[in-house]
Image 1 (cartoon, helix red, strand yellow):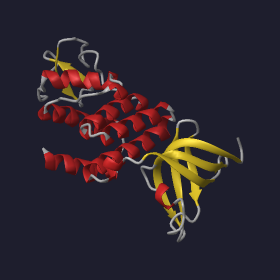
Image 2 (cartoon, one colour):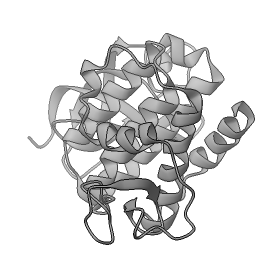
Image 3 (cartoon, rainbow, N blue to C red):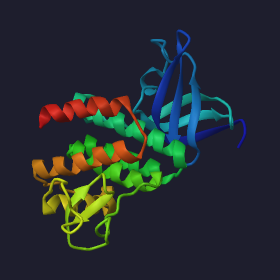
Length: 247
């Protein structure tokens, strides 16, 4: 597969300017993982690559593939331009975070199924599903890839099935016996966290969850990530500000 022209489906997850007229882009693909690609002259007004070399471009890319080296972009055919995301600053913020998070998780485990999860989540957000819920679902699923999944099969201390709350400090579910001073969350939040880990994003056709329950789940996930993943993303910090304003 060295030095061969290939067509590959992918999404641009990172962009760096190169000189005055070109860019180096990272394309996440299912078949080849992350491919570093040079887009020569793409910043020129006359370039046919100008509109297809930005972050969040989901397309079939024709590239001169060089294994373990910088490949060269020839052309791209857009699959989904995510028009609803791109015209909404809130949706853009969620999409940017999911792309950054996927990039970091992929670097740690290089699992091809991350590609499908990312694309599915972006399509749902573009189709106007609640972006916070979709993002939380992805965040919980990614914990499995990072090897730090919370205990959601029973109390994280004693194993009891009679759980009453969530605790990032204790690593998941807590029963009343093992509960100390942790805030009590709603039964719906307890059930939702586990459901998020199991649900197939592609099969979601409705999200009717009360706002306060959504935030209970989100607060647990945020705290859990801060404690156990070691990941710090600027896009997440920006997103937290948006969420705090909407509460």
